[in-house]
Length: 193
Image (cartoon, rainbow, N blue to C red; front, top):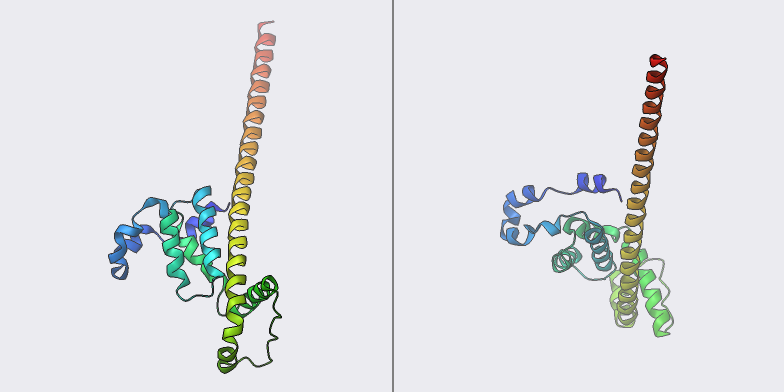
């Protein structure tokens, strides 16, 4: 995993502790596990952040922060991943989750009009809400579990690849030193003659 990139992008815990607006949460954000970049903390942070991103609720970042705190995973990553559903992607994502829920409930999906207004949405809310809630929850669980497994697999792949490259470098260095020592021994033998 791009550990250096994540470290560079993450805020420093000490800088957050000095912020007056976050001082009341000092005891919560002081836990080193909330800032660790290990396979477990990053995978669980992706799981929490993407789960919260697909829930059609307000204050997703707060929910993700409490989820990260409860699972003791990377706080910054879990809160940052909530922005997968930003104002640009939200309509597409929630419409897709609505379609999943409508399919699961075996109800016909509503066709979106060309101009979606707040009045249209309010009129349709009673019919849309069960499918949206179910589709969002199922999609969130599936995406969260897939993200967790994918991060763990990619992290493991990267670790094994690093081990192999270091092993090759060690073996090459050993071969090189053996060749140099055998070459020096051969020179010493010729000098003796």
